[in-house]
Image (cartoon, rainbow, N blue to C red; front, side, top):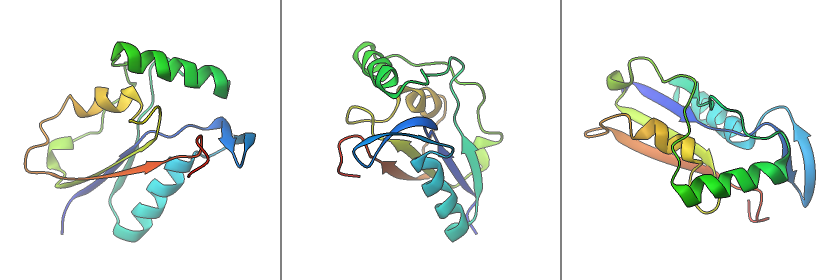
Length: 130
């Protein structure tokens, strides 16, 4: 049996939802991560930035755009323990400006992923296609 890690970043609070803004207690990516865990097992790890993004959705998307433009690597609060022991890693994130939030690059660039099975999953609500 493979050792499975489900690592994800998910936005809670004010989010774009069904054509408008809504406060949610659990982000879409977190919901999908939990669904995956229920289906395949494994350990969940939520990525959290050291400096929180704005609670305002509109401000947050501008922060994300600026991070992308500058290729920022925001500091994250913690890293998964024993990362090297996992064989299969699900990587979940919301689609921010056509890519992952930059904090996910911070996480993934820390590790040698050679020989690991990486399974990305992405959520999207902002453009109305998710």
